Amino acid sequence: MNRDKSITDLFERMNIKYDESNPENKESHGKIERPFRTIWQRFEKPYFANSNWNKLEITLTDLNQDFQTFLKDDYNQMKHRQHNHLTRHQAWKSIQKRGGKIPMPHDAIATTAKRLERTVDSSGVFSLDNAQYEVKGLHDAKVWVFLGVFEKDKIIVMDKQDGKKYNVIPYEPNPVGKYTGHKQTIHQKTKNIAENLDIKHNLHKPTNKGNIVEFPTREKTPPEITNPLETDTYETIDQAMLAFVQICGFKLDQDIFNQVKILIQQNNLNKRFVKDLALMSYEEDKAINE
Image (tube, rainbow, N blue to C red; front, side, top):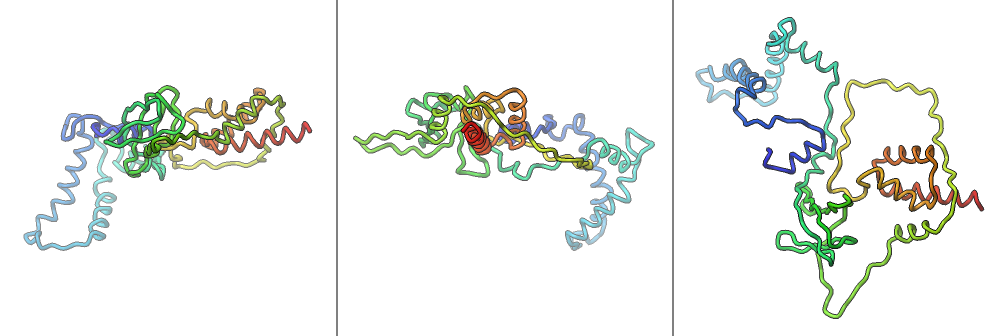
């Protein structure tokens, strides 16, 4: 598994620790491999003791039911090897009380990606597998190229210097004699206007939620993992807050700054949310000052 960097990258983003030792190494895998051997000897092997075992037919449903019965009534009622006063089932229940299982995020597999190092030239183009690709808004930079493992057509680049991500499109050069330029985006226009504004802040504070008591759950929430193929979110909260101030056009005091920061974090640093929140703050402040 260590040879597949996309899998090790996924495990690191999910904060999963795994055993890096070699398979079939009884010294390091004894606690894992020994139970499989016991199950084979006590559950599977008796099926082959039948003289006509090669003609024995059993449905998968019945086999699974038999196996569940075996685990519940036989194997898991055995004494634990390190804790003789507990059965295997009791030991498992004691572990569950200290945290329980953590489900995998539903979109975790879709974030699996290979990572390659490339250089975007001065024209915003780089080569990959005998094909050329264009990166809008990035030139002359060292980048990481992320290739979706399960989304074959998904390609994203990340600037190694500042961590910003960019979408990639196939490169199609202009015909000879034709030259094109890129118009300013709405964000760039808003940023330019905001730099010349002198506006005081007046953001609303969060409303009181009342006396609501939340009951704890035995199952932990799925961890939030970064998606290397995602370009709709900021890499860090500092980048998101800088973009907010540039769009809304005024400096925030510390209390308002912290409130905005919490809201942005709750919305996973989403660029659309940051923009909408900043523009809404700008409009409210403008209406009050008028």
